[in-house]
Image 1 (cartoon, rainbow, N blue to C red):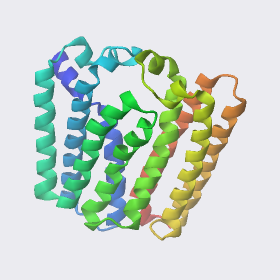
Image 2 (image 1 turned 180 degrees about the vertical axis):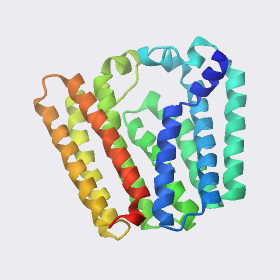
Image 3 (image 1 turned 45 degrees about the vertical axis):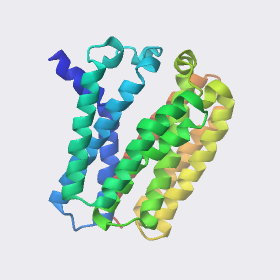
Image 4 (image 1 turned 90 degrees about the vertical axis):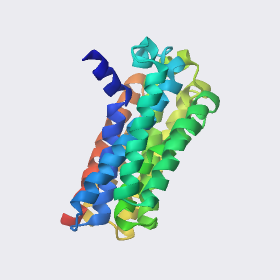
Length: 286
């Protein structure tokens, strides 16, 4: 039973479920009130398997980094509960199954989108997190693929709506991850990772957080201004975005950066939950 749990945890379930939420939101935004249930199920099932496979590959590549960070020292690849060989076989099976579902039951555009996201996450981001301060941007690119894939599963194309979904999630992820890098600064420093807070300090991250939250608000509003969503979405997202911006600005006078970083991070979760829910319900909202 413990081994089964270890294999399950190796897929980083939190990442899988979060990205499934985005994929579902993108799908439902494009579908409106005309939901093709078999296509919806195939899209989510294929996407979940592809993401799970990518996460397992990532765990294999990051096992040495994980061994140096307190919050990741109990992962299966660090404790060697699962061998590298078995993990690679597991990741490959998950990936083949996921791409197979997308290929036969969704469309080739989604296959291409998710293949690009997998390559960026496993290979490019895997290299970048060890080598450059810009790894967060690269990681955000792969993390913005699921809503675009969900949208393209229905529309069969990449248009302005897909581009805005990509930008919104990219802009959301940057302050989200910089907030994590702020309150987990010690972990990142001990692991020797060149994140912004380690290389340039927390204050530099605060400027970036404010800038990206501002960009997020603008991109989120454009989704309504270009007619993809209604005014309920617009009011809710702009209102939540402005509150998030207020939290970001409070960082410049914060006495406890760890506490402030956690607040920005936790509110980012509220933002993304609201965003996904409003997209999913958009066809039924004014």
